[in-house]
Length: 315
Image: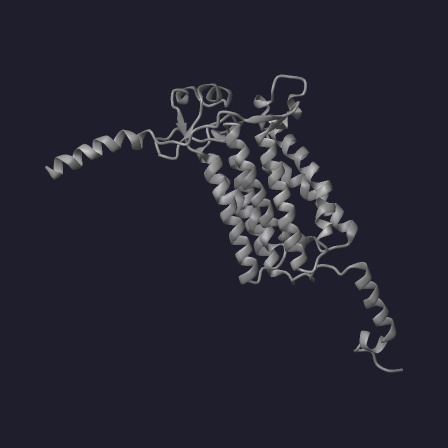
């Protein structure tokens, strides 16, 4: 009797387990008066705000001016959005909306992380050098914050019903409505499936976890700047090799592999070599002193020239 009851319980629970999945959100935007607010854009704005707060804290902890973070972000964030959209338009031209403003329609999705980080980094380095601060140290301060921002931004992919992988029957499979399967450009043989690998969720988890690893390494190991940023490039790119092996949405393919698979592989090697070389160099100085501190130090040296040049012989 107990065995038959147990068998009946398995039969009852089986269909329930098979029907488990992550449902797609019914909406991807909401209205505030005449303004249509897209969750995708909102997620990235929240991610950027959190990244600025985290970077201010980390930059202050190494002796930097936290207000500098906002000034750099004022330039690098718009540059990052432009770079991310340019990367998307170049690598996935088939997904550009067929309207005159299609190449600029970031609210519908379509931001390439690597293009955004690349252009934001170029502009950020320009601003940092104009302020005369230690670029490598600042890069280490911002590295974990970038991962947190990227992870929060992936929530926007969930609302856009995009960034999913191969079909799956796992209980955390992501339900994708048929219209989004078609618009996502997935191969025809997968259109009859309804649940897919939630690669957006995998990346969100990885981004937060790797950010934690970088913070831990910065506190418990001696990592010479910009070692943490190099590990950011290495770790995220290595993860993307895994993610690109799961994704089936539209992409340019070269010799049967997605374009981003090649980009991720190259950047994984670049990040590893960069980290190795950075740890073999002399450690850079701490965050540069403020102008007032620098002036005070110069005045002290002028008042005590013998202390400033201890090896000088008396004349």
